[in-house]
Image 1: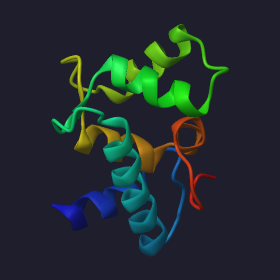
Image 2: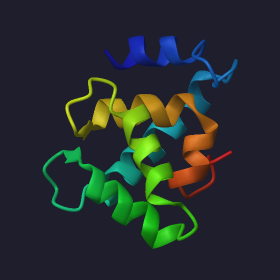
Image 3: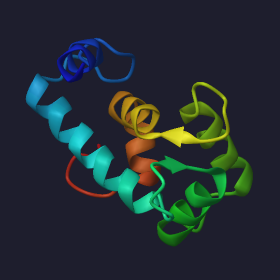
Image 4: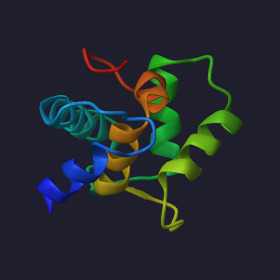
Length: 107
């Protein structure tokens, strides 16, 4: 599954033609940010956890902006963000990495 994901990401919107190693590094960074945002450690991020995570680092985001980010990441619309949903969105969109990430690959 991981190799399929990486292959798909190489041509995903917003990712361009990054090489596989760069995609792998971004996905690893996504996993670290996910763990940080998943405050209760249940393997999912709810809206309040995302608000709290973004609020700790980026006080200038409105609740409406965070709600929009949440809706974009929560692909299946079940009210929680899974690690897979987060990783997919984080890997595909550099704006998301800038909005809620930190580290060397947030470009």
